Image (cartoon, rainbow over all chains, first blue to last red; front, side, top):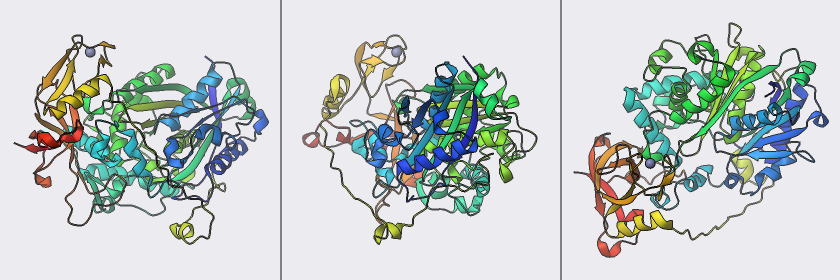
Length: 385
Length: 171
Ligand SMILES: [Zn+2]
């Protein structure tokens, strides 16, 4: 397999409701990514794009609909879609287009417009549950997250305050992200005093609902070295899916993520990720999820994560800064695009271009993760310089 | 060049701009209808719920008793072996106290919260549970590990649905 680099990244602002259509958002992000590496669409050989359920937009075959905005006209273009895991998975998908030797350049574009769905995109999540054995109970997505959070906290004696500390840490990083939806500082007390939605989940334990798009440009080694002095290499990719019978397993630990992470670490030659990884972007739609995923990513021992968190281990200047981007919790959560923000963040961080969010100490290796479906799917990308 | 300190595309709108007609929108309400076949395994599961019993499938290779039942084991990936009744009692594996309806609207003032739970069923393998709701319980008194029992609809009201169990209550 050939070496593949990320050579450019671009995104739209993340907002609660965007004026722009999904196609227009995709165009904005794609144009920004190409401009960032001074490339033109004619330099791009193929397009890998991602977007989550068609039902959010009410537009079926959304892949083909979005392709025009993604620069897909008259090119080999293919959409991937595995719920929340899409944003990082689309980069795995783009990676094998180039690693295989079939293409020298690939645009990866992820877009989501959550605001089209009325009155709230949440209603569409009803249809991810089993249509015969679960849906008649009228579940919502908060149920399943709340139950996983409860199980996770119970397993190790973690508290709601512990989870809120993680949430405040991540959200406040977003104040330094120019595309972020969150613009005001959030304290641990704010989170603990927010509206109870589905105990143990309170309103500020959750990421905001967002519209937005992100794009990155991938290139083979030969092309990357011609384009930039600072290519950021995709060192490893991994993905995995667990059973859809989510009530038949213990939710306290994401074993499928461990498998996906090991696949990526093996490819990257990483034996001790907790010692070798300098930056982590675990998927964080809820604050507990970031910690849960740090354990799954083998970056924190099970049950010791809160201790490390409270010791500053995951701060911007800690051993493994966690979600320096500001994450889904702060930058926002346009489902598929939210994962790709994490890829863009590693690109900026490893080039030393993350501005006020810059992780000190010349970070060399980072991991980005996205997660989705019924507590079930994970995709992982390791990036290095 | 880099993406830092650049101008970002994407224009935020306020809810009022959508409502007051100052931007153009198109509205549609899709009305999607389906009739789903329950299939071999879930068909029998529903029949037994109508009978007031919970049934699973046993796999001789991994020795798991699976609920909801399926005709093949997804781990061993082979046809599994036999029908097994499990009890209608179990243990709360996890739960939530939910003040939000399925469509994100808030529950009516005075309406009790939704109480979803994963219930590990007695007679099934450890960690094999189903999602259902709890009832006849003070929400603040619910604990992981609590023993619960199914409360069934009267026989004549059962239709062969997961809702033939009204809820699980502590016992
Ligand atoms: Zn088996």
